[in-house]
Length: 190
Image (cartoon, rainbow, N blue to C red; front, side, top):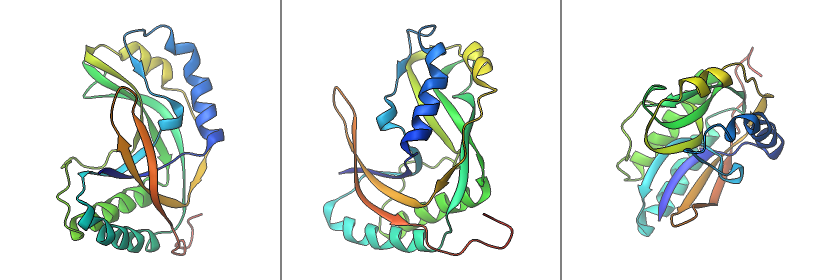
Protein backbone atom coordinates (compact mmCIF):
# COMPACT_ATOMS: atom_id res chain seq x y z
CA UNK A 1 0.00 0.00 0.00
CA UNK A 2 1.08 3.58 -0.68
CA UNK A 3 1.92 5.27 2.64
CA UNK A 4 3.26 8.43 4.21
CA UNK A 5 3.65 9.69 7.76
CA UNK A 6 2.16 13.08 8.42
CA UNK A 7 0.40 15.60 10.58
CA UNK A 8 -3.31 16.32 10.28
CA UNK A 9 -4.36 19.87 11.12
CA UNK A 10 -7.48 20.08 13.30
CA UNK A 11 -10.78 21.09 11.64
CA UNK A 12 -10.86 24.68 13.02
CA UNK A 13 -7.37 25.30 11.59
CA UNK A 14 -8.39 23.83 8.23
CA UNK A 15 -11.54 25.97 8.22
CA UNK A 16 -9.56 29.14 8.97
CA UNK A 17 -7.12 28.41 6.14
CA UNK A 18 -9.91 27.54 3.68
CA UNK A 19 -11.64 30.83 4.53
CA UNK A 20 -8.39 32.77 3.96
CA UNK A 21 -7.96 31.10 0.54
CA UNK A 22 -11.51 31.77 -0.65
CA UNK A 23 -10.86 35.27 -2.11
CA UNK A 24 -7.94 33.92 -4.16
CA UNK A 25 -9.41 30.75 -5.68
CA UNK A 26 -11.50 32.28 -8.47
CA UNK A 27 -8.54 34.28 -9.75
CA UNK A 28 -6.62 31.06 -10.46
CA UNK A 29 -8.90 28.74 -12.48
CA UNK A 30 -5.90 26.85 -13.89
CA UNK A 31 -4.99 25.52 -10.46
CA UNK A 32 -6.39 22.30 -9.04
CA UNK A 33 -7.23 23.26 -5.46
CA UNK A 34 -6.84 20.43 -2.98
CA UNK A 35 -9.77 19.57 -0.72
CA UNK A 36 -9.36 20.73 2.88
CA UNK A 37 -10.39 17.27 4.13
CA UNK A 38 -7.21 15.93 2.48
CA UNK A 39 -4.85 18.60 3.82
CA UNK A 40 -1.84 17.22 5.67
CA UNK A 41 1.79 18.00 6.39
CA UNK A 42 3.97 15.16 5.10
CA UNK A 43 6.77 14.20 7.48
CA UNK A 44 8.06 11.35 5.31
CA UNK A 45 6.77 9.75 2.12
CA UNK A 46 7.29 5.97 2.06
CA UNK A 47 5.69 5.07 -1.27
CA UNK A 48 4.54 1.50 -1.86
CA UNK A 49 5.12 -0.47 1.33
CA UNK A 50 4.91 -4.28 1.13
CA UNK A 51 2.50 -5.82 3.65
CA UNK A 52 5.26 -7.83 5.41
CA UNK A 53 7.11 -4.56 6.23
CA UNK A 54 4.08 -2.88 7.80
CA UNK A 55 4.36 -4.39 11.33
CA UNK A 56 7.98 -3.27 11.69
CA UNK A 57 7.12 0.17 10.30
CA UNK A 58 4.40 0.52 12.94
CA UNK A 59 6.87 -0.38 15.70
CA UNK A 60 9.51 2.05 14.42
CA UNK A 61 7.09 4.95 13.99
CA UNK A 62 5.68 4.36 17.47
CA UNK A 63 9.19 4.56 18.90
CA UNK A 64 9.93 7.71 16.91
CA UNK A 65 6.77 9.43 18.14
CA UNK A 66 7.47 8.48 21.76
CA UNK A 67 10.82 10.30 21.61
CA UNK A 68 9.20 13.65 20.78
CA UNK A 69 7.10 16.07 22.79
CA UNK A 70 3.98 17.78 21.48
CA UNK A 71 4.80 20.99 19.65
CA UNK A 72 3.02 24.11 18.50
CA UNK A 73 2.91 25.31 14.90
CA UNK A 74 0.80 27.59 12.75
CA UNK A 75 0.33 28.02 9.03
CA UNK A 76 1.81 31.21 7.64
CA UNK A 77 2.40 32.86 4.30
CA UNK A 78 2.57 31.16 0.96
CA UNK A 79 5.13 29.82 -1.44
CA UNK A 80 5.50 27.66 -4.51
CA UNK A 81 7.55 24.68 -5.67
CA UNK A 82 9.88 24.62 -7.48
CA UNK A 83 9.71 28.44 -7.59
CA UNK A 84 6.94 31.07 -7.67
CA UNK A 85 7.85 32.00 -11.26
CA UNK A 86 7.55 28.41 -12.57
CA UNK A 87 5.30 26.77 -10.01
CA UNK A 88 3.61 23.40 -9.96
CA UNK A 89 2.56 23.52 -6.28
CA UNK A 90 1.19 26.40 -4.19
CA UNK A 91 1.63 25.92 -0.44
CA UNK A 92 1.47 27.56 2.96
CA UNK A 93 4.40 27.26 5.33
CA UNK A 94 4.64 26.49 9.02
CA UNK A 95 5.99 28.66 11.80
CA UNK A 96 6.45 27.95 15.48
CA UNK A 97 8.39 24.93 16.72
CA UNK A 98 10.15 24.35 13.39
CA UNK A 99 13.35 22.82 14.77
CA UNK A 100 11.47 20.20 16.84
CA UNK A 101 9.24 19.60 13.80
CA UNK A 102 12.27 18.98 11.60
CA UNK A 103 13.71 16.61 14.22
CA UNK A 104 10.39 14.75 14.30
CA UNK A 105 10.42 14.42 10.50
CA UNK A 106 14.01 13.14 10.62
CA UNK A 107 13.08 10.54 13.28
CA UNK A 108 10.08 9.37 11.28
CA UNK A 109 12.18 9.02 8.10
CA UNK A 110 14.85 7.11 10.05
CA UNK A 111 12.15 4.81 11.44
CA UNK A 112 11.03 4.06 7.91
CA UNK A 113 14.57 3.26 6.82
CA UNK A 114 15.11 0.99 9.85
CA UNK A 115 11.91 -0.83 8.95
CA UNK A 116 13.42 -1.56 5.53
CA UNK A 117 11.81 1.17 3.44
CA UNK A 118 14.02 3.02 1.01
CA UNK A 119 12.74 6.56 1.30
CA UNK A 120 11.23 7.64 -1.99
CA UNK A 121 12.19 11.27 -1.43
CA UNK A 122 15.75 12.35 -0.81
CA UNK A 123 14.87 16.02 -0.37
CA UNK A 124 15.46 17.85 2.88
CA UNK A 125 12.29 18.31 4.97
CA UNK A 126 10.54 21.57 4.04
CA UNK A 127 7.55 22.08 6.36
CA UNK A 128 4.54 23.05 4.26
CA UNK A 129 0.97 22.14 3.39
CA UNK A 130 0.15 21.86 -0.33
CA UNK A 131 -2.94 23.86 -1.28
CA UNK A 132 -3.10 23.70 -5.09
CA UNK A 133 -1.36 22.06 -8.03
CA UNK A 134 -0.81 22.95 -11.67
CA UNK A 135 -0.16 20.58 -14.57
CA UNK A 136 2.14 23.12 -16.23
CA UNK A 137 4.66 25.64 -14.95
CA UNK A 138 2.63 28.64 -13.78
CA UNK A 139 3.73 32.08 -12.64
CA UNK A 140 2.26 32.20 -9.13
CA UNK A 141 4.18 35.25 -7.93
CA UNK A 142 1.00 37.37 -7.56
CA UNK A 143 -0.72 34.62 -5.55
CA UNK A 144 2.31 34.02 -3.33
CA UNK A 145 2.59 37.77 -2.73
CA UNK A 146 -1.13 38.10 -1.96
CA UNK A 147 -0.94 35.30 0.60
CA UNK A 148 2.33 36.32 2.26
CA UNK A 149 0.61 38.07 5.17
CA UNK A 150 -1.54 35.07 6.15
CA UNK A 151 -0.89 34.06 9.76
CA UNK A 152 -2.99 31.20 11.07
CA UNK A 153 -3.98 30.29 14.59
CA UNK A 154 -1.37 28.17 16.43
CA UNK A 155 -2.27 24.51 16.93
CA UNK A 156 -0.75 21.67 18.88
CA UNK A 157 0.85 18.75 17.06
CA UNK A 158 0.35 15.82 19.39
CA UNK A 159 0.47 12.77 17.11
CA UNK A 160 2.08 11.23 14.03
CA UNK A 161 -0.33 9.62 11.57
CA UNK A 162 0.45 6.80 9.15
CA UNK A 163 -1.72 7.55 6.13
CA UNK A 164 -2.63 5.43 3.13
CA UNK A 165 -3.11 7.17 -0.23
CA UNK A 166 -5.91 5.87 -2.43
CA UNK A 167 -5.13 7.24 -5.88
CA UNK A 168 -7.67 7.56 -8.65
CA UNK A 169 -10.00 10.15 -10.14
CA UNK A 170 -10.43 11.48 -6.61
CA UNK A 171 -7.54 11.11 -4.17
CA UNK A 172 -8.55 9.84 -0.76
CA UNK A 173 -6.46 9.47 2.39
CA UNK A 174 -7.05 6.97 5.17
CA UNK A 175 -5.31 7.03 8.55
CA UNK A 176 -4.20 3.46 9.26
CA UNK A 177 -2.37 4.16 12.54
CA UNK A 178 -1.39 7.03 14.80
CA UNK A 179 0.98 7.50 17.69
CA UNK A 180 0.99 10.24 20.33
CA UNK A 181 4.01 12.43 20.89
CA UNK A 182 4.69 11.51 24.51
CA UNK A 183 8.14 12.79 25.49
CA UNK A 184 8.32 15.68 27.92
CA UNK A 185 9.05 19.06 26.36
CA UNK A 186 12.46 20.53 27.17
CA UNK A 187 12.40 23.46 29.57
CA UNK A 188 11.44 26.68 27.88
CA UNK A 189 9.44 24.93 25.15
CA UNK A 190 5.67 24.69 25.31
